[in-house]
Image 1 (cartoon, one colour):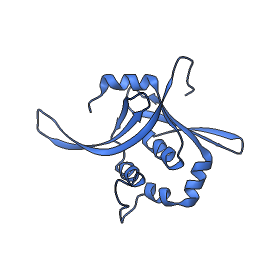
Image 2: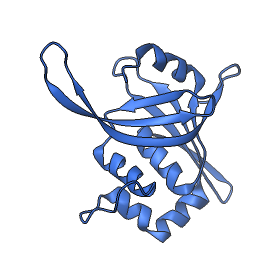
Image 3: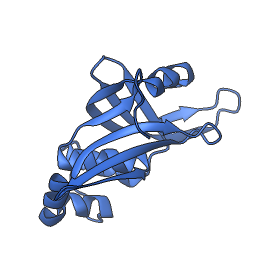
Image 4: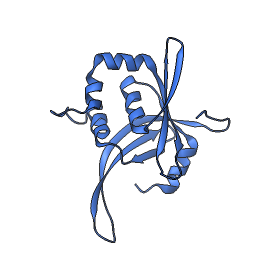
Length: 156
């Protein structure tokens, strides 16, 4: 989705991924929710929930918050592959979280790849795209409109 005039992007300055314990006040039912929290340059946060647990784990390994588990996911394997990291650094240019499906509440991100003069934009699951940008050391942005909309629905 191209950013239209008047629509701004907010740059992500830090990413945290964690498991949040929650409970239903009426039933007392306790459950865990996986969360990816994007800290933005304007001081606000953009929060996505129900992130794959493998992404939560891989982000924390990447940030040296936890040790590499004995049983690795594909995401941790890719992070440790020099061939993959080199390819990501060369091809990944940026990630923009730029859509929300109003029916499902699911966000979509655009991963921008460019190499040898060819530019490709792929629609991706945002947590996966953010993870690729973290590995490649590339910028991550959120459409400003989505940041403002998320505040009205924020539960965290």
